[in-house]
Amino acid sequence: MRIFPVILHVDMDAFFASVEQRDRPELRGLPVIVGSPPGRRGVVCAASYEARAFGVHSAMPSNIAQKRCPKAIFLKPDMERYRNESIQIMRLIAPFGDQIEQVSVDEAYLDVSLQCQLADHDQSLHKALDLARKLKDCVKQERGLTISVGIGGSKLMAKIASDFDKPDGLILIPERDKVALLGALPIRRLPGVGKVTEEALLAAGIDRINLLKDLSHPPTGLSVNQLQHLQSLAEGRDDRSVRETTSIKRISSENTFDEDTEDRRLIRQCLRQQANELSGKLLSRSLHAQGIQVKVRYGDYTTLSRQISLTDPIQREDDIYRSACRLLGKHQLVSRPLRLIGIGVYTLRESPVIQLLLPLE
Ligand SMILES: [Mg+2]
Image (cartoon, rainbow, N blue to C red; front, side, top):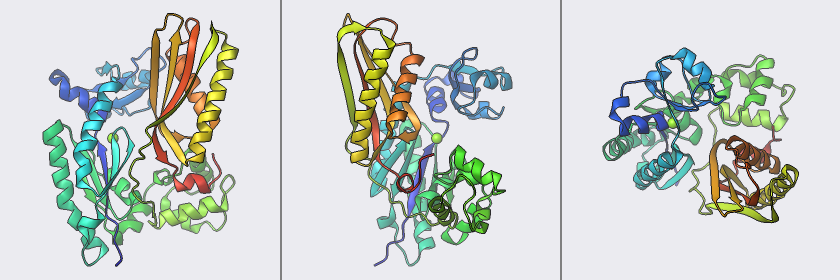
């Protein structure tokens, strides 16, 4: 029997900012920005909807955010608290699906196909509405947070759907409407269209998804494979399955120096080697990492670690090395001689097919 895929994409609304507003009632209704304070060269990690009304969005430099919204309240991110909240929510929503795949701290796909099978695909999708409402209520009641849920016949459509009506949204995209709906969207909304691909397509005059079908040859900067893949996504064809987030939780590599050192060259060399080792392990298991951590131990055995969740999962040595260096620099961890240094990667996920097929950008 053919199974009609029914996928939910669950996306927490302005997650970090919402957690702050929930826990600190005096912040409710106010423009809250979680991220670097203005005056430093950092960016916005999350903005409450009140701040978004002023045109503030995540990844925007904090200085610009403050100019747009002078009354904004800037808060330092408390990643530990958001991560714990994320774990609670994931535990809460996992039983609603047959499979759950967490894609970031505030996003997950649920496969609910088996519970929703009816005579045709669109009927099956409609059956998931009730389930999605229950799921939203559950998170609201138990955790005091709103989420947006998209229902679609694939991961692609579910994700597009969840984005349509934030916050507190619930949108279903029927199979019969998907191509028309996708067609009107800007090309960057397709998975796999990063900055480089977007620029290549824009240069060729392709700014909407429905224009992709008119291309018979890839524009400069794109391969034939890549174009074909995007054209098939533009038709709403996406057969990526919801993969249970892998059980291998983290891989790490660390070294103790013969003598405590703050020699940058030596430290870089060591990091490079660790990045190489980790990249090899990820590659051989077809995994990408969405989080990276650096750890240092000083001569007096004080041990510090700092981590960051990445928007784009990484696997290559260069990316691991550079992210680790960035973390070390940002937190000024090499401020005195080190006894030990290490890199860990976590939130490991199976490599997306698109990255296996396509040349890396
Ligand atoms: Mg979100």
